[in-house]
Length: 193
Image 1 (cartoon, rainbow, N blue to C red):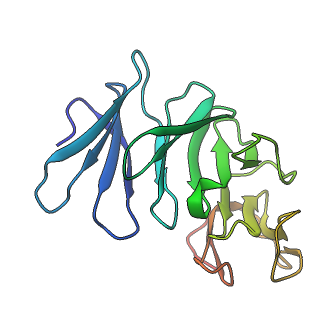
Image 2: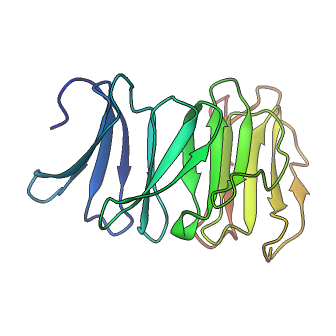
């Protein structure tokens, strides 16, 4: 049980660990079978805003609202790298944590190479962003539609695409299937496409 107030959760892809972040400035990693805490990362005087595992389970990312995402080896919990970002409400990672896709608190969407911290693609303002497990595709929920793009420097399997049927209420979020071949988007008005 996460003391204080939990703010975010992530489940390892194999289900062997659950990470929780809270207002106490910690990210705690749990064994879901026994309920025991197996590791803790603390950033004093901060709140954990978002946590995410890479699709292969090798990297655990944590954002504490301090304009950076910390990437940890998910097995040893050793800090691997720190990526400078805007303050994010949420983020996802590609395999091995090589690409970070994030939603900023002001609606800025980012897609970053975690080794360099440099943007990989210019994205519109929006409410949701996703990256395929291999880092070759990105998708964004923006304005009244969704879009999907190949990521420069990575082998994309499809062409760029923009929603042919914009929705007046706008899109709330978007996800890509693990292989990047399917996209689902949540409409602000009730609906999933």
